[in-house]
Image 1 (cartoon, rainbow, N blue to C red):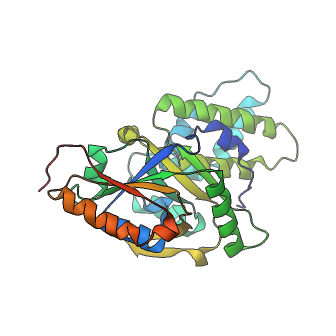
Image 2: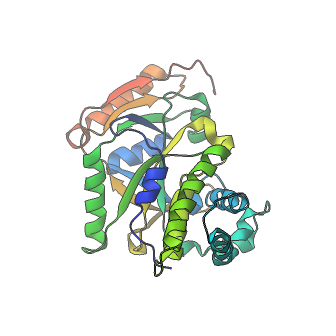
Amino acid sequence: MEHPLNINIVEQLLTGPSLEKDLYHYTSSEGLLGIIQSQTLHCSHIYFMNDYEENLNLWRHFFAYLNKWETREKDAVNFIKVVRNEFKHWAVLSKEKISLDIFEHFKIDDYLLYVLSFSHIEDDLSQWRAYTSNSFGFSLKFNFNENFISQQSSLIDSEVSANYTCKILIKDCVYSTKEKEKILGGLMEYTFKQFKRAGQDWHNELFFNLLTLNIFFKNEKFECEKECRIAILPFPNSELTDFKKGKSFLIPYVKMDIPFNILKEVCVGPSPFPTHSIASVKMFLKKYENKLGTISVNTSKIPFRSW
């Protein structure tokens, strides 16, 4: 299927942080070195994230929601029947068992959607534990704006094709079933209107809209992370995809430049040597000040020992 590029309905259905609001990215010392030295951020392929339910969660809610979607509109029954038939191959994703056969059915290399995760929470113990090495790591405070979005879109467009428009979204993840059903309800109402218009290619657009929403639907067990995501979609040119080492497999990713003065602060995680850690990070950041701007450094206030 070809992916329509008009995803205004998805942008309307999802909530997002106000631009120029602080967002935090937790990483290891190796991650900090890579980010600063390259002045880039890595957006990982959606199928290779740490939550194994990535790209499964939405489909489970979608097929469950079809059972309860109600409207008094004429042709609604036929509409639901057509939708079920159109996406019958994806219904298997609502099963509790995630098998190798399901992942083979995904055809992973056909859906190149890349994401980068941030949190609204500053200095969070659970994320120090989850995303750093034995809680020794760093939290990077970013402050994104419209210029960042337009610069990244233009940069990626120029590398892919002069005629191609890349879409970048910054949106909050959705955790609760109630909120997911509300979003799916809005999407179904929108798609039903298209269904009633003869000649509308609503099948492809609904499929693309579901894939896009899927990037932001997460298991409720992760709600404490208050995650926000930058998503690059769709990204049809696999030649620009790089690969890095993961814990269990190679991770496909694309690079996004860090413009001057977007990275505001680096927080050193719980450490037995906070003074040394702060001093060395300041020396390190000073070396890249002309490329990234002045970046402040502080240390975690959490009284936690992992050593």
